[in-house]
Image (cartoon, rainbow, N blue to C red; front, side):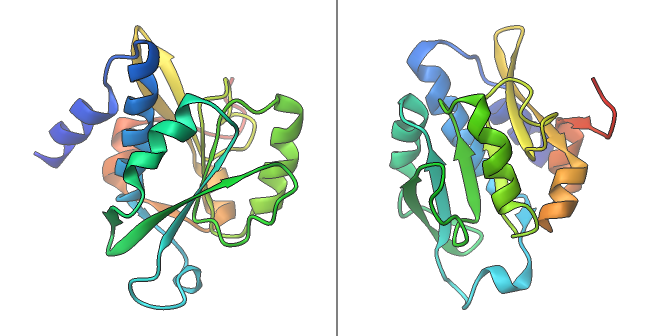
Length: 171
């Protein structure tokens, strides 16, 4: 039953402004299937910090989730830019950012327990953890297992079953 709910919510139609509402819902739902390193949360109930890099409809769509609870943590949304300190981010959503900044941002958060998510084409192949991709008019996702391991975040097998898994050398 859980898999059915994920498929329905994570493979929704991508149409205009509604596309970003779908992507925002996907990010929040996916966070429910991720385990962060123990030191990521200083105390029980500490906020889950969702950082959004880039301007535009994706960031605006995420705002509706401010204060919602994910895995017992209230969701806190913060806007960031390339060069900002990202050490307190648990989830980093990158959208509408020039590709030339992406490699530096990914390097900055590698091994820090940050789940990186983006709708930038080939994001998972470039070292991001979750890439949101449009396929046949639907938003789907790819997961880079090596990037997840390097970031020390564990992704539930339930989520992995629904993803296209990117492995080293995939094109």
